[in-house]
Every structure is written in C-alpha cells, then in structure tokens.
Length: 233
Image (tube, rainbow, N blue to C red; front, side, top):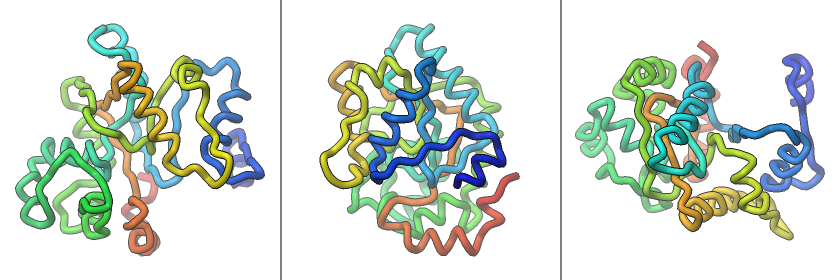
C-alpha cells in the first residue's frame, strides 16, 4: 500500500492498532483545513461521477433547505436501502423477488441482501440482469437530478460528511479493545437520528460494494476469477 501511495502521489497513514475509528480520527485531525471528508471502505468501487455528484448533492440539500445533512452517499447496489432503489430504477423488482426474496428496505443476517453470495453476484451482473456499475453510473447520472432521505440505518462504505458533523459527534468513538468494526456506522447513524440530520442518498451517483461479511469468502473468489468485471474501465 505504501508503494501504491507513493506512485500516485497520495498521502499514507498507518496506525499500530487496527481500529477504524482511531485511524479516521488521526487522519481527520492531521488535515486541519479539511471541511469535507470522503470516507471510503476498502471493498468499495468508485465510478467516474461519484465525488462530484456527492458534493453537488450536499450543496443542493443545503440550498434547498428541506433537510440538514448528516452525510451524503451514492446508490450502492449491495446495500440495505439502495438495493431497492437500484432494482426499482432498473425495473428489476419482479425479477429479484422471483429469484430471491421480497425487495424490502431492510438488512440483517436473515436477509439475502446481506447473507447470500448469490444475491451479491446478481448485483455484480451475474445472469445479465444488472448492468455494470459504470453503465449504471452513466445512466443514472443522465437522469434528472434527485436525492432522497434514507429512512433506515445506512451502511457507510462510501459517504461524504463534514468536519462539523465529526466535531458534533465528539470525533469517532474509539473502543478500549478490538477493531470497533461497525461502531462508526452505528455512531453516525444514531447521531443523524438524534440530531435531526438526514441521511441523504443521491439518485445520480453509483458505487459498488463487493460484499457483506457473510458473503465475503465466496465473493473474494468471485472477484479473483472475474477481474474483467471489477477492473478499471
């Protein structure tokens, strides 16, 4: 990773302790002039318009004045909320429900969107129903500008938030032990609810998510054997 960062002129931060919240706090604290923060997980695949559209969405939410944003995110096909929006926009609700289960704004280990590798493959194009994330990105980017408020906990694999929100949270909470995986997601979603800060999802930006934990083993092999799907285009 250090070599990749050096080749691309990126900054690189490493912490002795494997803790997501700690690493984020250190990185944000070091960039004292940064007002906006893009947080992206290691299993997220970005598309051409993601960064610009998320910023445009944040600015539009602010100017519209209907909500105060807690954070802004793209449509992510493998996501509790966004998979239903993607299916709806692609006209695939019936196809999905015949193959898997009822499409519902819901996640959890009992839901196939989070537990089934076959669902993960479906959203990565297996069966030729769902287009590539790049094709989706171009299609949705061409649609009329739109955003929606997400009514449920949102998986924060790729979000845009502000230093103001980070300060309002009192930074990310760092657990005494362990990696704290998922704690940052709970924290910012709880903050959004308790402080009336909306979770905003752009209808015009798309990013890919490889898999949830229960799908990881199978999807890692799928990734390695289908590099044409996941490579740069």
